[in-house]
Image (tube, rainbow, N blue to C red; front, side, top):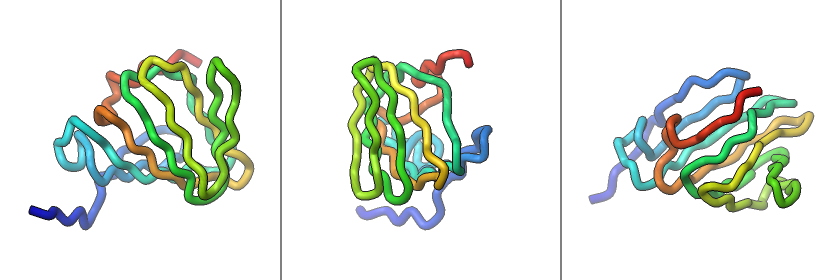
Length: 118
């Protein structure tokens, strides 16, 4: 049976970033996958992390800098990036901010992120 997600679950985070989860542990109780729309303000960044999930990030507007131990990737609107569980990664946005969709498998959960201290 099809399920309409008419209103995503807003997940509060510091730094002015907006996370609207459409599918996942918070929105639907699904632990297999999460799908969230992110809006990051200009200059936003977060600490490096080594998550226990794979993540597909599709940039809708702006640009996202993805720092990894293997090098940095600039992902612009219309492009996507895939990071894998156990890979150290850090996300930053440029001066125009960014809007993007993050798909995590298994679903995003705070205890699976493993963020580093700043």
